[in-house]
Image 1 (cartoon, protein in one colour):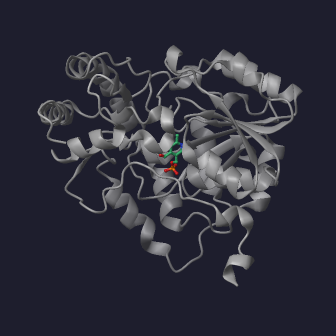
Image 2 (image 1 turned 90 degrees about the vertical axis):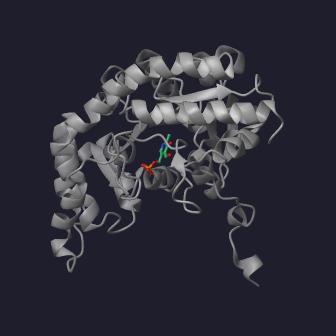
Length: 373
Ligand SMILES: Cc1ncc(COP(=O)(O)O)c(C=O)c1O
């Protein structure tokens, strides 16, 4: 009976896979998730305990103070902001509010799996735009725009997960304008941009009032290294935010999440800036060392490597296992599609942790060379 009762979209659904899966062995060193390498700010524990004093109350459903803090940080209006339990909630909400069964949705491939998951749940028809491998997976806005006819929405992740490639602001603006002409919504994910020194140059947050079809997500997860506390936020035109608010889950953010996020955005920007500077330096140092061990690897645009495994002659999942034997977790990219099964993804951290990574990499490569897989 239950098989008949379930929505057809759910029946065939498989859950998306992600990095950071350390729950089987918490001693493993996680390089598979891309978060601030300094960890959370040292005051986080105190912010949490101070936030916890009013837990007998329901949280503020409209998250007014948190929206004020975000608006003041980004110099935008509270009416342009929505907050969610992680940006993941907003990915889902956007699909629930705007995507109907049969809608065509254009999505680069490979990209972050939650977009497709949300759209599939709503019964959308996904149109894949394959990022050109021979051009380093750089998004070609003209090619993507050519696929927009009749599309309800197009998704762009900047920098893209898992490839790490960035797209210039003017190119994305061109896409938004073309999409507006075709009445297509643009979902732009900037959650990985915050730990990049190019964040303010590339961000389109200041443009949301100019484009009714644009929605942008960002998150506290990466900048403040706190995936365990779920806070994300989104920017859109007032009209778009009103519709998203209308469909949002009630009390989606708890009191702790709201209060901690306010403290972080108001008091811990130096923590983010220090990470951005260090990541830029470490990227250069790591790149030459990684290339020496793995063969040619593109210089990452962002703060994580998307490295081909062809020189090592093994698959993404075999490489993950080889690294795990030395206590290091990297991202098995095969869940991003066939094209990624010969790539691995790992993040850049502090100098000492990067040295630990390089040491494990060197030992794993010795194992592979000697057939110990
Ligand atoms: C590109 C991208 N967007 C969004 C998210 C969701 O992050 P969160 O829900 O923690 O804000 C992730 C998480 O890995 C991500 O990689």
